[in-house]
Image (cartoon, rainbow, N blue to C red; front, side, top):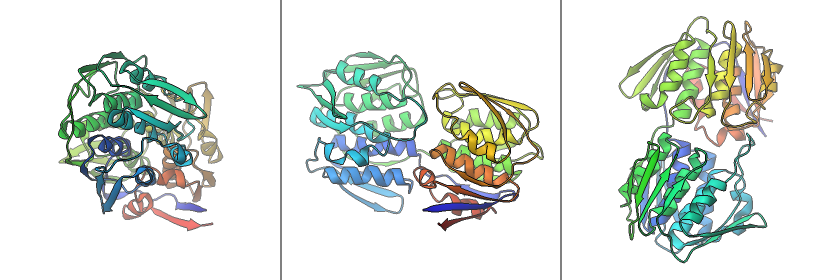
Length: 419
């Protein structure tokens, strides 16, 4: 077991570079299956979730090699559409469900175990199944396996009952090789959806409307290989922005797309931080005292649910009473007990957290309860009085590349220790 040991009270200063987006690359790697050729992805983050999806695809028969942040995916040989032997590996991550759309699109059949991931609330795949069935697939769930088969996939009109990132990407994957035109309405608009659409288009797909409420896909007969660079990770960028603001630091966060950060920048400015664009980066200067604010998580371009937890840490030391309304996931306040151990004054009522700022947090032993809560615990350790230890760091490794090394380069006193 490993833990992070953090001595709080040091402002972050310097420059940090953001890697490719976890939520994008986990859709791009399965998408590469569709063409039956060689694809090269650049700016791939070195995180556990990437290692996991690569391992699954290799087990299915893909040839994959990595050179630093380059990932070369060769699916020219037939790969298996039956993922049932890898139930444990697939159940360890949420994004494994993109294999459903990719394998169905290429082979018109797929057997994929139900996905896992962080326990942050109910995340059904009913909208995914609705889309696959509309395209012509028969779908059943037996013994924890999603089983799909279609004589052919035919374009159609699909309306998503709820805005779903996963369903939007999965239906796109299945539809690019379908006959005719598919129209998907009420889709999610996150940057990583646009990234997957751009990648598919570079392979020869005909997708329009990604980033809007409606996506239209004209099916093509085949796709070809390409080289593609993964979009910067807006959640990682937001985490460093909040760490800089919380510690009263001065950090230039490079390799970001500033407009992707508008909702986060607006709230940090409201709390007193100074944020300016510098080329492909954002400079964040934290205030002497943070101000309280109200946040409601929403689908993009609203405030991202994946940054709700680190934002809560800022609120614990802000002047006044702050409010978080979590509208996406119903169980995303499990981390609150960890912050209470540090002296935070937080009251939970359903999906609403009321946070009264305290002068400072007190260091203690805390644990990551999921990926993004793990990042929040690190931010809490950076601002706490004393030395904090954070356990369950495997959650953090799923989505953050070299987090402690980057923070040390900014002046943080943080180290990974074996226990």
